[in-house]
Length: 402
Ligand SMILES: [Zn+2]
Image (cartoon, rainbow, N blue to C red):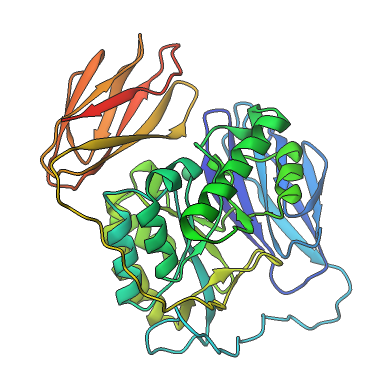
């Protein structure tokens, strides 16, 4: 029984729980004083405070909960009782590999498969590097692009596809779906299915909810579209400015069948990835895909894997464009990631909403604190990010590039 603290907001946090040694278990989760259950996934969870009880719902042995802190930020403890099942301790079968593509270099996969997931792509500043690193290591991954980014970057969607990556759905433009109506959620997910179909020629069967936030309305829409909700076992915290070393450390906790949350855009993730792949090889773990029937990482069953038509980007002209993507959100502030294409010596002007102010920035030189910010390259490439204080204004800023 493992308990892993995951995403965090000012008022609540996620916890991922993984049971081993039994498939018919009962887990008791001891919440801290004041804490209460907001949401759960991949298990039947009863109770709302004190001790919760979780049992399998057919989604496997990994599940998650969202807890309201109500002033108590402690991570709960959990205990596991296996009911029935004899004394077997199944320890998961060693996979008999017939991996066609994307395995793990020349090494064995005797320790099993893990899923590397990269959300929020594709991005002009990072996706080609990501794909090249995976390819040169004979590795694979699961990407969760937004529909908006897919539509704006069709050649990068092709790069994902040509590298044999598994492609899931991550909503159209990364909203807080749990605050939306069923019809708006439906639109977010189905438009993205179409954009991915049109750009990569595949129809996703996996859905990663933005911020890991889910509720019954969302799950109803997912199932109506044939999508399985995929959260994660390990959060790399790359979205929260984790260092390359910290991201590598997080990946070192992965075990057979597990999934790690990473993102397409952070420079530290790109930096960590070669080391992560080497570490996995040393542990006889291979990179796999996520089964839409079990939600676990398994050997990739790539038909397409090696097609290779790398459709490299043109590079030519000097016209510059910038994409603005809303990222993490807290009560008082939010992140925005910006990605410039068409130029590597650019000046981006970012128009903040009234009242908004800059808290932080990364991967660019950013001047100004309110009104219009000016960003120029600092040597970290063409994707960068800012954290803005809302000060009552929750609008996403606009940006232009010269
Ligand atoms: Zn995301």
